[in-house]
Length: 134
Image (cartoon, rainbow, N blue to C red; front, side, top):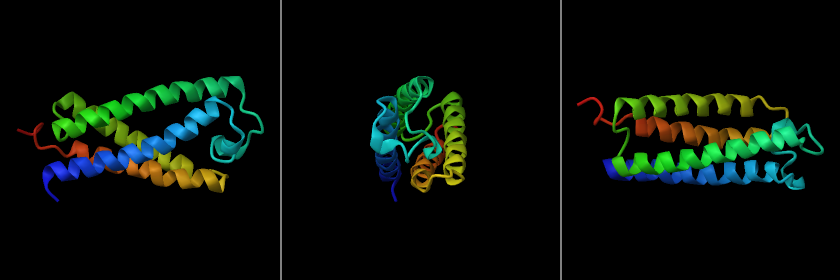
């Protein structure tokens, strides 16, 4: 796969994963009934206000990640040592998220493991830019 196609594919996969994650996180923040088995281990009948506030902050962070992934695609990967470090940190964070989702007691939430792995894969692709090494 050519360089620009590789980055476009990574971005599109991350965009799909982010869209799903934003739907889940936004629905928790809005205390939607359908999302109760998809988030927070499926343990709440009503999401507490503090948890809804946390999920709102997470949603804002996820929007920033989407913007950063778009910039990574436009630059065809990390463009500096700082962005490479940030990309590595986000990749590790996504892998941790995948593990946390995988061990959830909610079978619905375990599906979210796939979306976290998609994010980690995208960051791994963007991290591999040769621009920083030159």
